[in-house]
Image 1: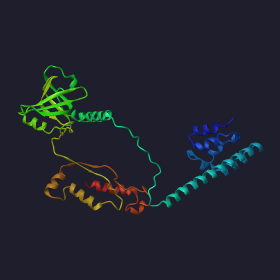
Image 2: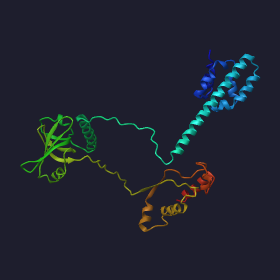
Image 3: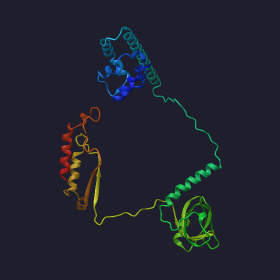
Image 4: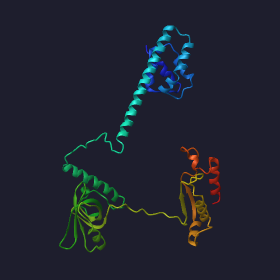
Length: 337
């Protein structure tokens, strides 16, 4: 019976096992050997991989001999472990040779673009349904923008009744023409139906808007009418609705900055001190000082100090090489505000 308890016991003790090791550890050749105790005695990392096992194999073999197992069990275990090591070495050499071949291949092709794979696009014949889907998607997207505006009595064209009332619709323009009375007649449609919209030339502001409408454009129309015809009082285009800005009773400002990197030789300390002097109202024109006096909030959104050991050879770019001193320097500057 295969010795599957080794893997289970190691998992229970909080260790992760490289999948390539599970088959080895579950082999019945190791059945009589206390593998778990041997591995734990080596102080393994939380993730036990093949490299760790092979590197510590001499110690494992030594401990097996100390256990005083029968000669048959010991021979089987040693033979199996030796076979495993040879297989690992062969795999490692093969992987190294493969990497070398790839490296040589790239060296030989230096300066050229190598195409390893070309995925041919699936060619599909375009039909009417594709155009319909395109226009439908465009209509729904632009419609969502128009919905951000406040439209009275917004409804779908197909739901309009014969009762005259105030209403709004969103539709795509399918036809535009000028009537005998010099009014504009615009036909619009949505996913539920069509309706004719009259824009009276005497309503100058709306008429000027309507003159800019083009075929296939998506617009919103507010007006009065019924299922037969709609008289426009306003035309809404699919721009993003401007939201009313909320303002405080007093004029105050917030300042945002980032990436000070105190401690680095790139830290612009002289400029930062000048900035603080401006905040404190010590420098600048009269208008600039007045603006500084209204600053109530100062946000530093990241990288206040440069840190230590963040990347290789960082110490060469540090004026302050102790992170505590970096923060002390930052604190001294901020305390002066």
